[in-house]
Amino acid sequence: GAGKDHARAKTVEIVANDLADVVTRQVLADKPGEVQWIPLPVSNGYNGGYSGDFTVRIVDAYPGTKSQDVAISELKARATSAEAF
Image (cartoon, rainbow, N blue to C red; front, side):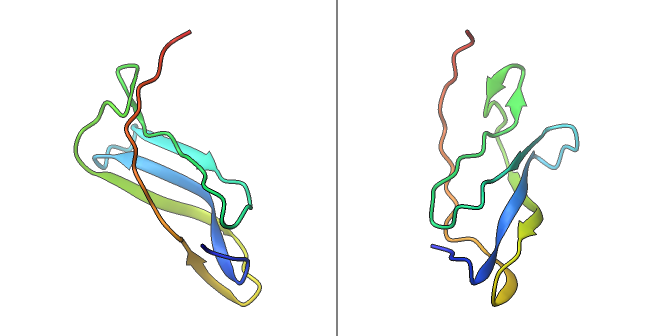
């Protein structure tokens, strides 16, 4: 995984189908090597209700000690369902 030698993603946006109004923005904790989940944008009240392309944008980053290149160890997508309470 990415250590503190490289910059790490801090604020991440997930954009559905290049639609400016269909965006999830999340600030990640500065915890190198730990898995962190970001929800996909919501469509009509359903998580991940969009099909097609998603774009991941790194808005800003935690600085690295040796390199300011942003290190991303792994990206995965997972579809889940969410219940309204």
